[in-house]
Length: 90
Image 1 (cartoon, one colour):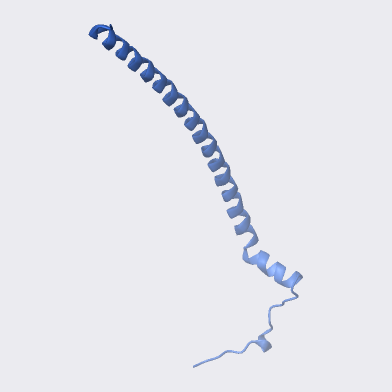
Image 2 (image 1 turned 30 degrees about the vertical axis):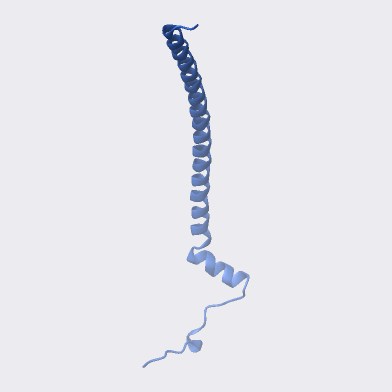
């Protein structure tokens, strides 16, 4: 028959082993999540760089001189002469 002290020792030993396995699992999971976090931060940084480049490109393409140049060269538009301008008054 197992004495009460032996039973308590066995139960505490099992609890220590379960606790140690829990610590190992949580530590592994924590490291895995940290690696995932670093990867997501790297992707975020790359997207921020690309966003900045796209904003710069958009501002370059949208300058008034660029718009006028495209209007003249591709669409054949011209600035109307003074005789073509009509002023509307109330």
